[in-house]
Image 1 (tube, rainbow, N blue to C red):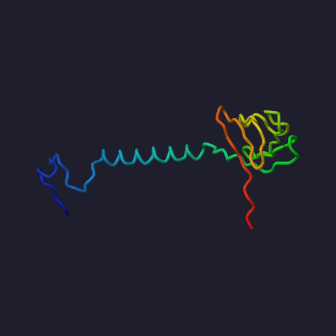
Image 2: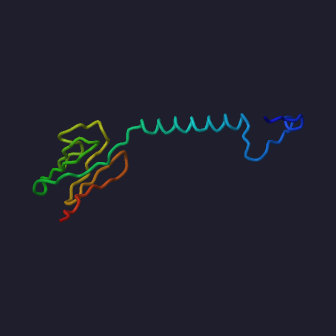
Image 3: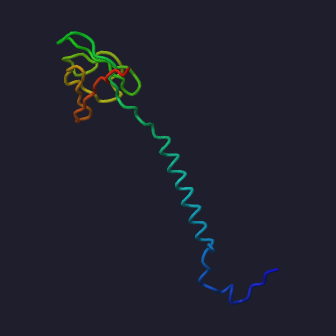
Amino acid sequence: MVLFTQSALADPMPQRGVLTVQAMAKMESDAIQELRQQAERERIPIRPPSVLLAIVGVAPDLKASVLVDGSPVLFQQGLSKPVHGPTNRRHLKLRHITPPCVFFVDRGRSRRLCLRPKTS
């Protein structure tokens, strides 16, 4: 059996390692807030990067197949907008095709996608 003296109960400075109710409540609140933020981050969809799948044709009549947000999109040399595929996913506009790369403007920024070299 442990008995507390009046002086122990009135001690305004708790001993080291002893947490107050307010400190424990704050720790719990912080942990819950972190879990909420983590769940929110997981709900935000992450766009996969665009990937150049192929360049076909003979210059100057080239076409480029690009995977944009998981959907194939076909671009043709001389046309800034896609000739086939969803156009509203991203704001990619074709500048030109120069094998092995395709040059775009994506929301005002220049971008280049190139074919990956074959590895054996």
